[in-house]
Length: 317
Length: 290
Image 1 (cartoon, rainbow over the protein chains, first blue to last red):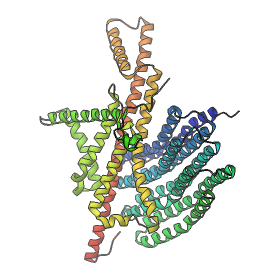
Image 2: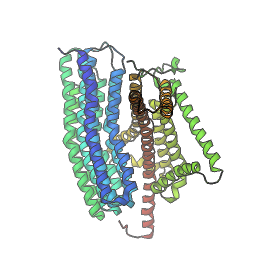
Image 3: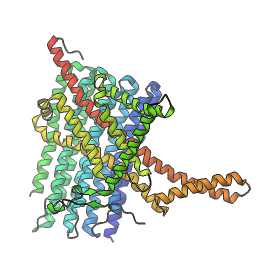
Image 4: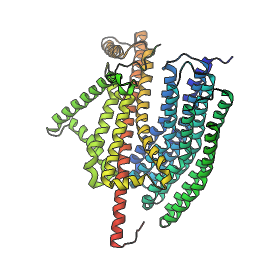
């Protein structure tokens, strides 16, 4: 028999358990690559150590936010436990847990290639560290968005919620959690490529740096669509006349935009990463490479926009 | 086991305006903790002043090392001519955040950064300082033009990206410190004692062990020895956990906050450098060499 208590405690465990999977893997990759870098170039001892401490702190912050959500769910109290609230808490746990896993693994790849680059060029370490920190702070955006969505969902809890409201909040959580995965993979590939490119050719840094800031914003676009849709899902009311059809619409809208963000973000990351290598190899072709990358990314992003249109028309239907 | 997570005293002076949220209230505990942190910092400054006036001595060396660390950090990040311009802001943010994090080690005090409002204030202060410097260096036109890069359509995304910076900075600090504080609270609750009693217990155990060891040959009384060692392991475990979550985590998080501030500042200045170099190249008619 499925009681609200079972779902509640499942949500409590799920958030931090899902989050710790990725953090474990990510911190392992990060520390491994730092030691690898040290064995290659022991003159860069201080710089590699500083990069490792900062990188590991970034990787860890995903699971820390998941822990905070877990503790708020466990000790926060508030409304009495009903079935809709328990279902909504599962949505919160999914959103924060999967986002934490995704960002941890993605930012570990940035740390990995930054360590390799610092081992190559220890006297250029500060610039590479800057590039890595900017990449990691942008990679971290999904879990912050998921955390904000979780807090917003929690602030809308009330005892008069119907099961349809609970499913609506669950769909917002699913939308956010699915929407995190693709952009994180794309950002990870791109951040890894850009840190490696700065290590390959330090004279191309002045080109790579603005290029990476622009491209990180472009790869992030599907995630912002997901944030928009999940905020709409939280605040739009369920139709009173046909609640079942309306709830199904909401769930499908969340799934649509969540799955639609996968391919676009990953391929945008691939394209930008490849172009970063080329900039490092031949910086004089920067303008051609920049134009081609931005144009191709505009085509790639268009499929995310199609899914956004379908999701919006499903919600407002 | 009962844990009071959100049980804090809040004064609401402007509640009659309809602003009932916690954001508009005065958090008494946080205010007190911040004042204690400031007091600790001020005492440290007085001690430093006292010792730096004299000839070389080990305590002055510690303070000089701390200052020269930030000196090097600023020189590496900003370059020589900007070093002293931002040194004071950067080091102040670090030391204030650190003192807010480690003040929880004192009895009857909690970490001031455990409150979201303090973390948000620190994050937004750093953010707005960076924006102010950016406008000062680049001018209003270039500042607003940056939001429309690469296309004008991406304007809302760029604005959301800037706001997400504040959120990620403050939530990282808040989450880490709150997580550490709650873990320590749970552990202390499991021992069914509170911080001050636990500290008395620790010191009494240590003193008793020392005294017994001095006057009695413990190898003959196996039972007392094992009991004392178990207690000592417990004490060092809990003290070690507190050291980890109080000092190490606070240190790392305040360092990350400072490094992020430095990075954002360096980006704002670096673009000006690049701009200047490009315009110089145009003036002299040289080809841009990459």
